[in-house]
Amino acid sequence: MIGGPASLPRWNEVALSAREVCRCPGRGDAALRSISLDVLNGQLTALMGPVGAGKSELLRILAGAEQADGGAIESRVRGELALVQPPHGGRLAGTLRSLLRSERGGAAAPATRSRRFATLDEALAAGPALVLADESWPERPADELEGVTRLREWMADGRRSALIVSADPVAAARADRVLFMLEGSVVGDLERPDVAEVLTTISSLSRA
Image 1 (tube, rainbow, N blue to C red):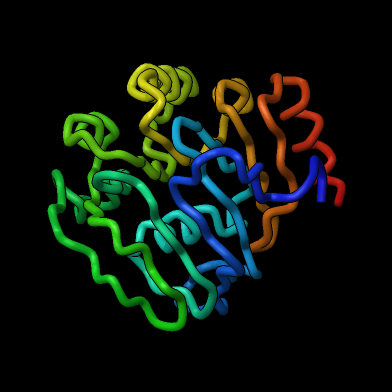
Image 2 (cartoon, one colour):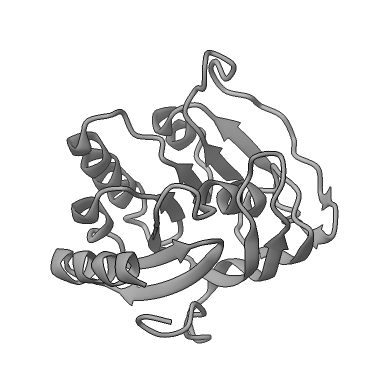
């Protein structure tokens, strides 16, 4: 693994914990292979990787919106969890204010109340404790950087957390931590990286 293990120091308070989360491939979704990670309170974590690496599948499972085949997920946030996904073909219009199920197949899903939103603006306005944003940026690269800046402002009190899927190395370098996925596994982990470190890791993974 590049950059060390995907777990974080235990003296920090954990907002969301996943242990050995896995899912078999199917229905056009990527497989997930025994993923373990922690999201800390007050921390912005970026998730990077090529198309098909399993980033979106992982976020939906962490939010309790989809089923995993094994593993455990524990949420310790004091408040709601927001999953942000952009509209796809008009099927997701506005905010879907549904309470997600607490039991998901072979994996224990977070018991925290979760809601799904179409935009980052809607999610932040609802005041959740944790945001999971799945490539919820418009098409211009500058929009992702602006979204990360807004998230950092929203997290300024140190009691809120975010995990985002990122495609922009400059925006990802604004995160406290960057995780890299490849073929359903977390294969890289950088703490407070600069842009050069992010780009170097991406280049290393592309040659793996």
